[in-house]
Length: 254
Image (cartoon, rainbow, N blue to C red; front, side, top):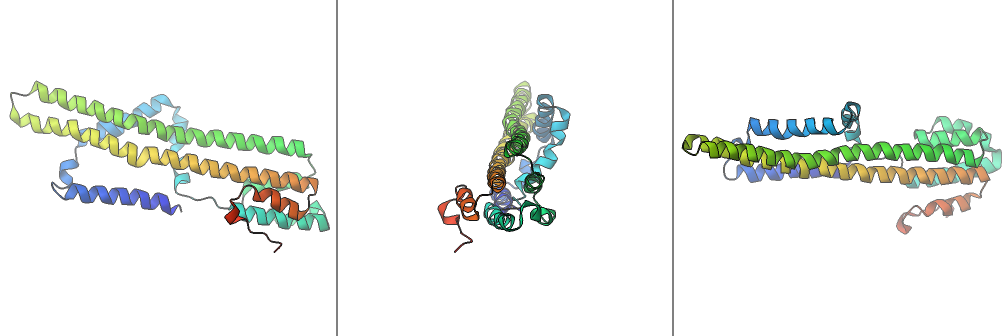
């Protein structure tokens, strides 16, 4: 799990609850018409903007904001150094048994293509195509949440206008001014909260997660190509260390 996402969300919720209960209580911030306007309007506008299948996929995309990358770049570097040493000593076919124990699908696919004897150019085309389509899928998920973050404040303003119109039409009846003003203000509040606490931060986290995953796949691709060329394990390690900050570069040859 991504601890930063969990801490951020629950900290925001906690701070809001504390600030709302200090004076008037939570009940003052609950308004069903406001929820319908903001949440319902945002959902409907998103479905208008994107195909239904993409909207439904946001549920599966959302988990990427809470789940960390299963394999680290440091582990990849160490793994390729080990693979290279074994391949130079016993041949590429000796990696067949290691492939079965690899959990990362992209790394497993790249090694299998290498063991199968494909040319480096063909391997590059296959893996780069997969990276490009992965980035496209992830970009779409982040864009959907960013769009929802744009729609939520807009529907909050729409709710505000509805409430103000209702209030102005009943200025002669003071009993109607309170509920209308509540709708006017609370919808803006809901829209701002959903946008700035949920949708936009999740879109940013998905983009960051996509960049990290793409960087890891690019590193795997470089490792696969070096393995195909039969590079020395030390050379492979130095090449892959370029993807790491100096403080994270740990050599297995020390």
